[in-house]
Image 1 (cartoon, rainbow, N blue to C red):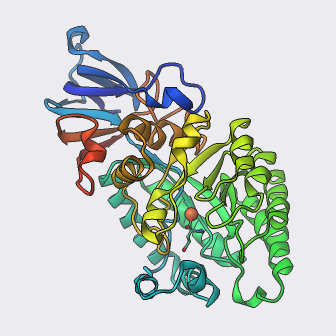
Image 2 (image 1 turned 90 degrees about the horizontal axis):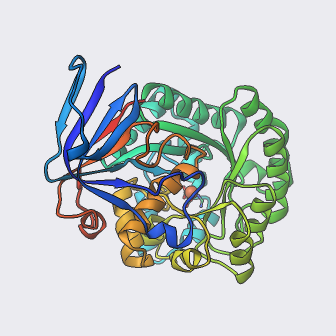
Amino acid sequence: MKKLLIKNIKGLAVAPEGQTGPIRGEQTKRIDLIENAFLAVENGKIADFGPMREMGGVNDWSDLEVIDATGKFVLPAFCDSHTHLVFAASRESEFVDRINGLTYEEIGKKGGGILNSARKLASMPEEELFNSAMKRLSEIRSWGTGAVEIKSGYGLSVESELKMLRVIRRLNEESDLTIKATFLGAHAFPAEFKENREGYVKCVVDEMIPAVAAERLADFIDVFCERNYFTNEQLDAILTAGVKAGLRPKIHVNQFSVMGGVQTGIKHRAVSVDHLEEMSEADFVSLEKSDTIATALPGCSFFLGIPYSPVRKMLERNIAVALATDFNPGSAPNGNMQFILSLACTQMKLTPSEAINAATINGAFAMELGAELGSIALGKKANLILTKEIPSLDYLPYAFAANCVERVIIHK
Ligand code: NIG
Ligand code: FE
């Protein structure tokens, strides 16, 4: 396998050493920057790094790529732990409806929203779905993402949910990004179950979960616990079945209302609970005492004009926070993690270092990938961002809507 040496790096962003779990509290502020640094990759792994003065000579030049990073920074590639990037069509007409006064929830109630996406996905051939998702994947890669979680949930039938998950599996096989798959059959109630919600829950539990598990098509299980969607009791029943089938929970909770989903997720040892725009004191207390990561999705708040998750307060209370895009056609039609950093800093008052840690190492742990990627550490997979020439790492969230990423280096 090709070897790589990056030299003259203006600043190499190294996370605190020996990180065996997500970063919490005060620690989240810390990024150690090695100035004028080098980094060596061998067999796909980070083999060595440090200041230039400690760089040894090269004995073997065969298959060695050398990059001169003068004026540029190297940091871990972004780990986007929550997306819905397999979808059939964009939904800008709903965007216009919202500008004209409808809310996201009202559009959903009228059969738009997730059901709109499900209708379009049902008729799209698998190959086409794959090709469109692959394009989105290359786009997010060019913006700095090296690992990503992708959910099903626009299928809402056994056949279409499996189709989505097969597309996700093929994306993982054919792209160099590391991809984790989440089964989200419980994303909305399809029209034919409108009057028989329990019937759909039964279909998820008795038909979908066994089919997904039999083909090993997913790593995680998700449920959209929300008013007009799945109740806390339904969440509990679906997670019970999912966990039994070997899937770990990563769930949608507290986007619009507090329904007890945070506690149910924690009870089932959820890897993460995501959204959290609305938080009760009891939710803070439960998260403080748990290993579950709180994943905030500021792109969704920006696009829907709903409150931002109170992550500043979460950090103060020692809760592990991850940041993700929620890339989907309804509430966050963009997968640019650099913009997420900018929103986290400007709207949620995170410092650039806190935002970067939440978007890299904690995102990796929120996909159960923390041991292999998400930070610059010896033996970890080479999943790196080489920036353009920029004055500092803080410039990354500061220069909002700019692309500061020159190149993403992935040795899968
Ligand atoms: O995370 N809230 C539920 N699911 C997605 C949006 C899905 C859609 O509108 O297509 C979210 O915001
Ligand atoms: Fe989502």
